[in-house]
Length: 207
Ligand SMILES: C[S@@+](CC[C@H](N)C(=O)[O-])C[C@H]1O[C@@H](n2cnc3c(N)ncnc32)[C@H](O)[C@@H]1O
Image (cartoon, rainbow, N blue to C red; front, side):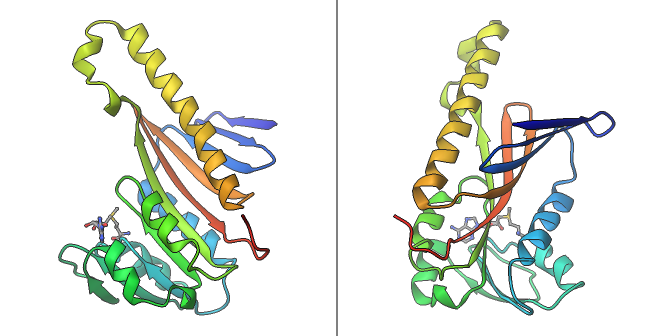
């Protein structure tokens, strides 16, 4: 494993066979989210079709569209001010009405956990399709903080164990899908880990 630390930005980079990881303590999330999507788009052809499953107001794609043509269809369960075409509803249901293999990039910018939707879309997406995701993990949700009381050592230890377990399980999950390369930005904030990343569905049939 190679590793490099940039003092000013408090960045730790590590490269393993499988991951390119960038760990930052502080970052502009909007900037990181846009950057990861712009990099993901380098794997798509000109004017790709994007299915934005957690569309919000379409803010990210509106920014990206300023620099290159994209055809975006959003899905949003709440009201939206989006200027893109979008469908109002629960993404888990709405996707049943769509031809998922039509899309070059599938955006899963969830508040918390995009994996149930990813598992649903995975067999339907075409080989070569790019998946972009946001995943948030809060290590202390499992046990109410009140139970730790003043025991800061146990609190930190518990957080550390769960974070390590997350990394292990995260990589196993993607290996099982047949994905051998993730590009990911990890943002650590208190007991929270946010993962902003993308990967390409392999061309060869995976298990
Ligand atoms: C992190 S925000 C996405 C922001 C968006 N990428 C943008 O550029 O504005 C997540 C959005 O997903 C929506 N959402 C959450 N669960 C959903 C679901 N099951 N179906 C559709 N939209 C959902 C939320 O209402 C919220 O607007």
